Image (cartoon, rainbow, N blue to C red; front, side, top):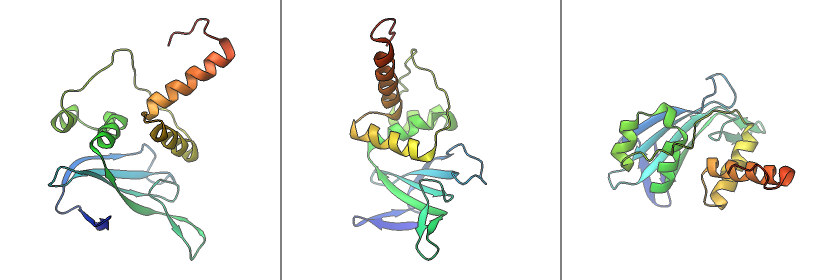
Length: 159
């Protein structure tokens, strides 16, 4: 796959494949997508994805007036690539992360859980997190904390 974005070439044949993951849906699910993280020779990261009609890789088919399976390429900053790694860490060997980003910083107060969200909610969470310069996990924590405080005040708050 080759694509030029902002006068820069993204090519799966000349970049190094760093990691390959899926979004957790079954292959036949409308939301299924698979992603490949690449690194260009100049050290820049980029993401290639293929997905079904309900995924973030979907493309709008004007002829039929609906979303269809599609592909996407997204350039990533170092920080975005690191956050992407953290989001999919359960599918990637820790050694790969360490080679690209250095030692893993583990927070013993955090645990990893998987929840299923409607695509529009996940997309909105990602958008809100980016606007706030937070990770999706940090955004969810802030939203839950705010909801808890609205219902209970600061009484018993353990955040």
